[in-house]
Length: 409
Ligand SMILES: [Zn+2]
Image 1 (cartoon, rainbow, N blue to C red):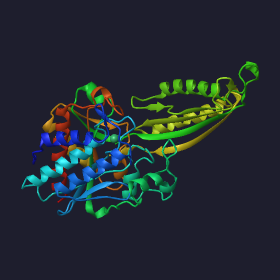
Image 2 (tube, protein in one colour):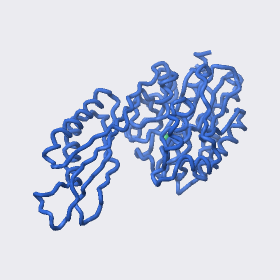
Image 3 (spheres, rainbow, N blue to C red):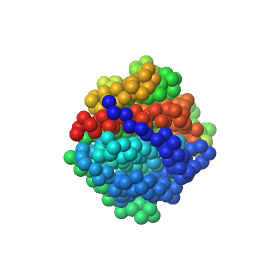
Image 4 (cartoon, helix red, strand yellow):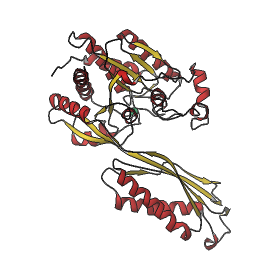
């Protein structure tokens, strides 16, 4: 087994340098196509060029560095855009690790010939359209997205691209070029931190189903309408949620999660009985069977509660992403490197969060590593990981890259 020498100081310096774009306290505000985001993309482009990559910023804002070395190539990437309240490592860690690994490979005569491409994919954080950049790269982007996607405040993707000087056309991947895809990310959950482990080798990514549930009643005066005569859509929604929550607790596996992330009452005034209520329901689990069970409960409840609640209920499925099993051979290599560098300090685990790796795994063998998020905190300015774990993760990934390229050559 060949181990290459990454440069821990360079890895950390680059992470701190990237954080300066949109920095707020110890986190970042770097939403897709914002000034800070575009400046960070140009900075990253410069770093890739200096490292010796043929780098470009494509028409969606993807920053991609192509290696000019002999095939086969390993593709490594993540994202550098952030949530409105963003952690400094979410995505950035994966991109900067890839850059460090590229440099470390180039500096070692034994590995200098090895080919690695690097990417920061546009809009992974769903400011306009989730996974916009890698969907474009993989040919999965619906053509109407560019003209229809909007930010929550109504600002249009088309306008944002225009302001950023981008034409909306992305680079297209060449399947024969790649032997696989490798990502590393902060866990964004508490499991590694609680278990006091440094590395997680991800075996599967949870599936996700999302629904819009609407309740239709009758608006009326909140003072003069007797309780018995009401068709209160808001109250019906809350009863529905309360029963659903109990049913899901009875049904849940250790990995089932469910969220009512958005609710709206119409007209939404203190003195008016809501005539309409809308909520999102999202649930996730690594098992397709469990997702199916959770969906069946939703439909059963919709039928059963329809009459009792004196309102109409409409359910529409908006997202259906199946669980993803990651490549076993790539996992084997990641496990081997994790046990070499961090004996007893690593574990195999599933991911509740969806990552670009899930999309790439449809096209090539793909793998994903996690490092701990202190306190399980993410999508927060307080998100952090110890320097020791950041370095360990990069080292494991670097040696896994060497092994995967060697095996494929
Ligand atoms: Zn992320």
